[in-house]
Image 1 (cartoon, rainbow, N blue to C red):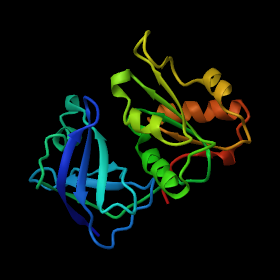
Image 2: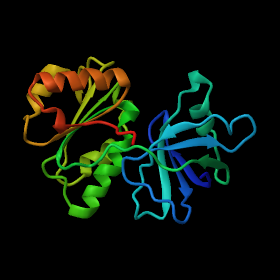
Image 3: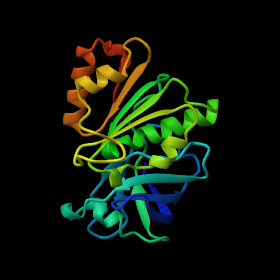
Image 4: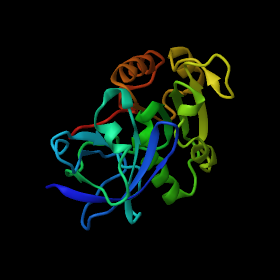
Length: 224
């Protein structure tokens, strides 16, 4: 079943990431971590569906998406960044999920952090704290860090930001690799959630296993 959403507001989060808020159709249930396929409701774009993960909570009266625009691709995300309040998009029923299985380490790369945003917000809403959890978040530069202030303000959440394209920064520099993971993670003491580009996920999952994290403690997107 397809739903038509009307854009209420759009604002920049970083230089190339935008927060879009839409009206929320009655009866549409989306769990934190789930995705929907979205298309712009304009001629020539209705068949161009792309998956996006809502960053709003089930208790919110709106649907929020946090979407990175790639102007060089001349595609859907570029068009989404040009939307105005009153414009409409089409979404299908929610699918997949990176499920919340308890406290642990949330390891993300770039816009891959979006499924974790709703999960962390939901747990904070329910428990009042994220004690026992840490966000390890890799980006190209400091300017690319999505919702940095919000993450830093989340009660109980430890944050470890690192950038790969700066040699000098106010955050850590370097890739999320086996050495870094070994220094931050205690196997058996919590779940390890991984979101990001496919190659990054593969590398991190392999590194986690190498440092002794059990496969059952590694949480990635499930498609059923």
